[in-house]
Length: 294
Ligand code: NAD
Image (cartoon, rainbow, N blue to C red):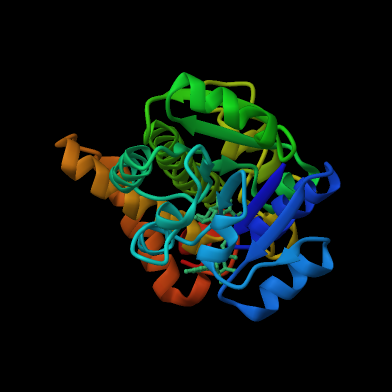
């Protein structure tokens, strides 16, 4: 398949490389010359612009920072929707707000294009290994059309329902993750400061009702688990600033749906403080530093 790949940053570059490895003819575009050069080194051809990338593709995949970037790449005179041939499949894997995803898909369909939102979980490790989870929003037919392509980059490909629902799944999951990580951080710190061995406490939690992914797989307390960011100074992993972005998107989506998300809103503020304290580039489990430092 002739694939246009727009946005070859941390995630996009690795996803693009897996499409090349699977034998697809990939043309990449990125506003950052250094990122585009890396995609070319990984075997993609160099597109000159968004329009050029879209015009010569059977499918276009985008992996962009957030909603304004998606609007600008898909919309307007020089955007994907104006330049893709009718019948082209459009896949946006960026994490953005569900409303923008629905509006862009609506505009695409009006021009005879197929479109799904397909945000991912699994981070750069999953992108490199080709084991990402894709949460897909769109019609059943568009999901089926996208599935073989997504299978080159991921392992779990889940149809979440209509356009925008992939983003809904992604954001609501990450809200739970953030709240769980903060709760784990508070409990681990308190138990340790009240005199418990953090490893013993984590062992009890992990066979008790407090167990969650943040306690048993990604524990934020240094030295409790090996091979997690907490055991290497919170380097790598999923950046606290990316979590803050997702929490800001989800609390805004909750406002439009008039659903109170009290814990989500507190989590958003905790991560905002963490970012303001200069920790935005560290893994999101570093939020425990807000408690450990006291
Ligand atoms: P990134 O900033 O490394 O990459 C985004 C790329 O898009 C950059 O190379 C940038 O130059 C390019 N870009 C921006 N505007 C553009 C435009 N108008 N035209 C062409 N290229 C443009 O971000 P990332 O870490 O790869 O994340 C991408 C998306 O995936 C985000 O929405 C993020 O929330 C989501 N995500 C990231 C991770 C992760 O671990 N990094 C995990 C899951 C989901």
